[in-house]
Image 1 (tube, rainbow, N blue to C red):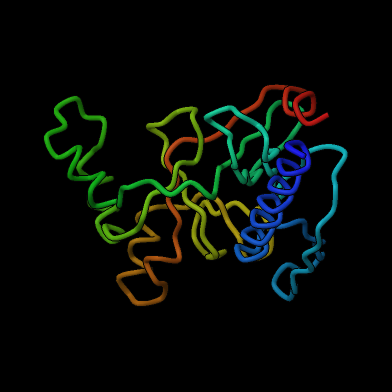
Image 2: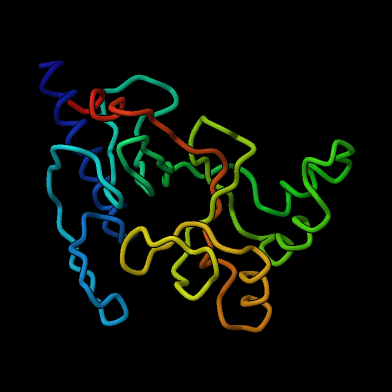
Length: 198
């Protein structure tokens, strides 16, 4: 009975994580050749190997602190490595509180220019993107026109020029909360992720 209860609970947790993925619009998609006229077609599929834009859901019974109940969006995958962002771990931080934490930064880790560019996003909640490179801040957003934006899935981009994003918000062309900030990331070397999900 204990195993059946654990399995039932695991299925419920998996269903909740899948629902989160649907809400965020980051499930498997079928690309179109004409991106501008693309209507995303999302579907749940089991993949034999990771690929960009797939959502990895940690097995509900996994007991590893870094990945327990994680939903990881693969933002870049090639033969050399896989780069992902945990998208369901909200931190008790905002960009503003993060900036305040570095207010007395004398080592130059956070330049005045970066502080100024982040000022438009002071109220944005920060998410834990993973346990690697915790000084690294990633941005997910829906704005294709921003310089440096890297397509992950239709309507979802990773990276951008921060100054251009700030200007867009200040001109009223985008809402500050349309940008999701994630601290840290997940990264796997060649073949490592494939081995873990096999």
